[in-house]
Length: 408
Image 1: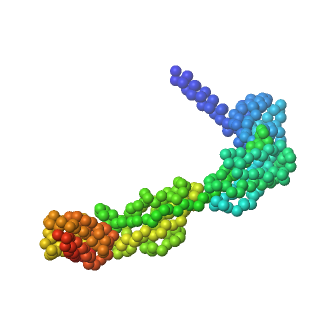
Image 2 (image 1 turned 90 degrees about the vertical axis):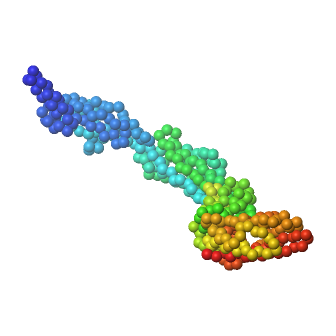
């Protein structure tokens, strides 16, 4: 039993040894030759093992794109005779006649609506293979093919290029195209073995729309980060024309910017954060550029906002004219924790002629109550402020001034 097992192992090792392609002993002792095929990028051809006086079996012709198979050649470049008996192991090499052409792409770049006539672009077709092309046809196709024109008048009819030869025609783009991107495809083919394509492209940018109105900004009254301002009428900044452009915003400390390129703070959001106390800011708006339209003209500057992180100190007592006002005493309004306070006249019904709350000559509110908001723009400057309460009793008006201070 052990002898049989040992014999089988020896047979397996010998069989593996004999099937080694690189085993010279097979050829020297047994006369077995290994024939390999290098298809040079074509379909793979399996090796053949030949015994003494066996001929190489001609394999099926390999295939290769845009090429014609010419035959099998030995290492000396001689065509192989399949009636011959090889003297040793060898490799046969496939030889191809390649049908290839190259064609240059056409890009007219980017222009603006109303562009001047554009110079036609030359297109070169070159035979880069090792076989003549045969008769070639040239076509222009695609959704926007009508926006371009080919001038083939300088080409021979039919066009047939020898190895290494080339010829040239031109492509032009129509005048007066509307905003948009235009594309087409040039195809050169001999109908069977050769097809090459090149893209044609041209982009026309429309003039960006202006925005209507002027941005208005305010300090976020309820923000826990008081160095934030928001464009409050962003939704009303509609585009003058229906271009589909969105609006972008920029912030500046200058209120006389007329060229949007002078600002590097443009953003999609209408909220600006991280601002510096004691600095006056202005916001600008414009339509944002997209793939079809250019950036629109910059809007006028918004109202200026001087953000101040100081609190407001209000001295309620005494107020005079028998007005009972709550709360009373000295009150500190913080811009971060309690940004507003409501002042209420407790004996409001005593004043049958009404009550007005006036700041800088402007009536801010009427009635029994008024809320001072620390984030309101009118309270952003340091210093003493005066809020006038005008009451009318039995037809007699009386003005009472409430003093408060914006201070750290």
